[in-house]
Image (spheres, rainbow, N blue to C red):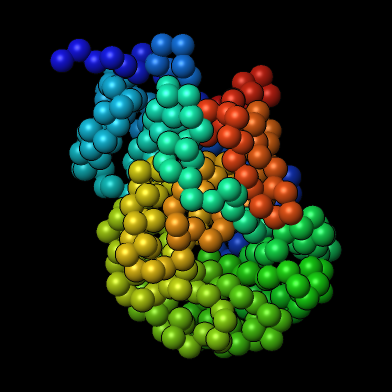
Amino acid sequence: MKQEHSITGGSIGFYTIPTDAPEADGTFSWDSTSMVLVQLECGSTRALGYTYADAGTAAAAKKLLNEIVLGSDPFCHAATLQKMLRSIRNLGETGIAMMAVSAIDNAIWDLRARLVGLPLVSLLGQVRVGIPVYGSGGFTSYSDQQLSDQLGGWASNGFTSVKMKIGNHPDKDPARVVTARTAIGGTCNLFVDANGAYTVTQSIELAHRFAEQGVRWFEEPVSSDHLIGLNQVRERAPLGMDIAAGEYGYTAWYFRAMLDAQAVTVLQADCTRCGGISGFLDAAALCWAHNMPLSSHCGPSMHLHVCCAVPRAVHMEFFHDHARIERMFFEGFCEPVEGCMIPDLSRAGIGLEFKEKDAARYRA
């Protein structure tokens, strides 16, 4: 049967953007962030999707684009996704390969919405007008002044929650948390993220120290692969402190295992890693079935529409690096208002237009 629509063109771009200051968390440090950008065409309609990943992901995405996606029907999206997943079987359905699938899947969702002239949230089925975001940064490489300026700035701009990195120096982390609390005042929620840097014993002890400063969220206190350890921390955490993980989930099976292990009280998922918006919807369905809150990891512009369309989403991460890049690269970036991002329903798809001239200097 002749297809009424087909993806007639596409491209993969790879961009590396230096950070505005040295950055580190509990287990890693970096001085640049890279984006893999997928652009698709269906006749005169153009769409985009992206992931934050290295050059290997760009190469994998280009292969998938050329061998599977070009010529396919965007409204046979599920069939195309299954073909991509089968094609990466021997590469392992995680990491580089799945991030390539994710970027393309995100672009196909954007394309489908643009072809029918709807914002993506309307195509998915809108649940809420907007969604709260939490300011995310507070890197372990920051001085106390940098930490205070960044987190305090978000609090003064109406953010109701902010998050800081911990884990490089566990003995100094309680003092850094006090510094952060002083900067944001008593009414803003304070979150901490150890990126798996602690042991179970350290995590439990420090959770109670952090609770003295009203910390409400403890992310990856131990490695997210250590499900027994996460469960041990969750069971012993102070009342009112969420234990969160899931940003390294690439498949629905990963999320199900985390939920079955009762490892977290809030599940995180990232549509730039977990198989795109399609995979994020899988995570959202699992959260619905488990009555579990869901929070998106990084890439706020890529998550905005889907997080306003799934019932269990509670907030999104407004990660400093990614928000900075998305402001630079995309017309239509939705600035938070009083700590909330609201999709622009006057724009089709995810509402973003790539500013090619502005991004050109960062293209690798």
